[in-house]
Image (cartoon, rainbow, N blue to C red):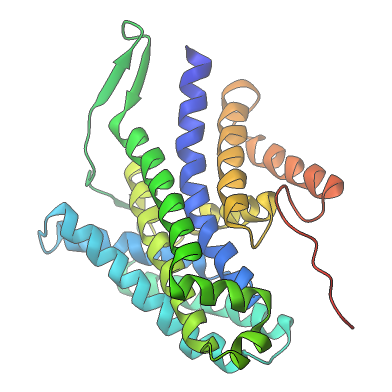
Length: 293
């Protein structure tokens, strides 16, 4: 039962990584850029929910919606101000800009909210379920996290495959020039992609802060890096790859902490990533792209 407990906890942690990784992989798949400020959008979502719930006394549901709205608007603003002017710029210029935006958001959070760690309140339902005469205990938060990830994946898959905007996203990911010739507004499509990814970052922030109830300007740094690792692990640009990479990363990290070493868990996770990329450079579900020169 102990192994099963660690496995379920790893599945929940991997679900959070998967939700964050979706933001990375969607932006890369369509805009062909790495938004390293995505982790800091998670931090902004955490602070939005924290102050809405504790300072203004809003209900939990309203606080969560406000957090999602804050991150969505922030993501669109960042895309419009920082990334849109660099649409035709080199990848290196965009990468440096993304890192600059990340530092700007972190330092702005320190000025606005202070650098001290705040205790995140219990917004989500507390309690647990017991199985096998109490030998296996699964918290409601763990179940909510896993179910939220499943619902998001199903909803996002249906959105991408069935809606007009989703088809426009797929067209832009395939060939921007051809999509533009077909009347698709590239800028609007990319902005919508950023909005969706940033909204998902807010959901991840709520789940992450509820699991580990501490909030600081550096909240999204390590989860953001690990989620990016999960996206690369599964195949950057692939939505199913983001799910698979996140789940596997969370399980590997949790089992490593339980059975090998807490201090070596991150090193082992990245070692597994390196081995996978050596065997399959595109990631587990990634596809090789033929680039014309």
